[in-house]
Length: 262
Ligand code: IPD
Ligand code: CA
Ligand code: CA
Image (cartoon, rainbow, N blue to C red):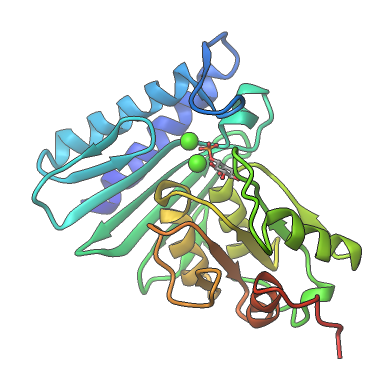
């Protein structure tokens, strides 16, 4: 029943964002100058809420635009109604709906759906990860210098030592491809599917990574914070890899140079 509702909410919202993409919709700014929210983010959130609340009126909900609906419940739905809003607003078809379900403080299930590529990623703790129903697995690249990476940048730049641009520049200077898709949930799913060997980002919110980090783990990958510790989506930094390049990527995040193939 939980899985069914999770998938129904994700699929319904994803169909809605696709349908609205060809219409005109209002776009406004949150804080900063380019942290956008569209009318469709709110509509997507509404349909997701409706489906969850109809089935589980007493569950806790945390959602990017509406905030928190606090309830005494061991079930917590963590929702990004559109991840990749800047892409969506610019008609770039790299965006998705992302929903994670935490039970007793542990992520148990996650779904990420990009309706423009018709790609539905799903994972349930202990059951593996799938893309459109087929099992997916992380890549087997063993050297970060030979890997294909992806990252993202916060709307308000983080000027800290080993910040987003420093780490990005270290890889680029060594000739390592580092992509920037603009949707952290998709970045994570593409690591899970073996398209990328690793993903790192300095500042995310729980709704960006809730579903995606479980999908990476269930596809055989490794996810930690930027210090290499157990991953918790309520803190900002993330490193998600195929596991084999994890320590090498972590060392660069901690200030080292990109290690050679050795
Ligand atoms: C953003 C995307 C982006 C990441 C940002 C997020 P939004 O989410 O995931 O890839 O770099 O940090 O805020 O605003 O499109 O939901
Ligand atoms: Ca997001
Ligand atoms: Ca969003």
